[in-house]
Length: 328
Image (cartoon, rainbow, N blue to C red; front, side, top):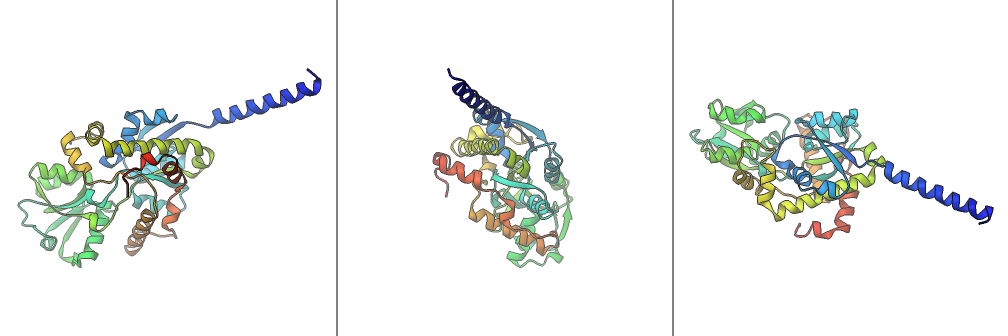
């Protein structure tokens, strides 16, 4: 072997080693901020069924119950990803938070409902006049309330609206301290099954209520392949739920307490498991932004397109059409 050939061989070996080091150095670890909610079931399924592992991603669940805390955790570097609702995500991005939505978990307006105590005398929306309505401020329930007031022409001044945490709403109904509530699944189904409430109106006619899987922008920039793998696993989980609702409910029951598998199956029927970021979903985010601005709850300039990074969703949909079969 000539000295020139040895030099070329050495250079090639160094190049290959460098490329290998670059690939191995890219993290496959994802710390995901997540709480216990029915809508998070695609993440639970992806973890329990080993879809994340299959795709070469090691996902660690970090328990965080409140959406603002999820986003702050990403900004502070304690986690890499999170699962906030649209309101919190819009608020933080309007303030410059360096995060982006890469997919949606379980969503759908019909998972949110106005329900009234059976003995309240409330049979229709206008029967709320003179009654006590409980809803948690700053949530998808509050969004339903605002949208319903506008769409139905309600006089909100005639209704005693109380700000009560969603976790405490079932107790408030049981204690008869309120006449009606706006809450989300599985609460409406659980309370209806217990004979405590009657669902008067679901929110599907007013909103879609997207919840997003988000990553820090720096993480996306440094680890695009990891994010792509994560999103593919998430898409696999969403399809699994659509194809296997009972098994998905059994998995969900491990995380969502005080609800049976049968109850969760009923609740899941009010949800949409389509993880794709679409033009329609961006328009819904624009509607959310306008709603928040109208209530004086949003400062700063932001548009729906600023919330999302659709390239991973688009790539998975194109490369794996079998994972979006049957979706509209």
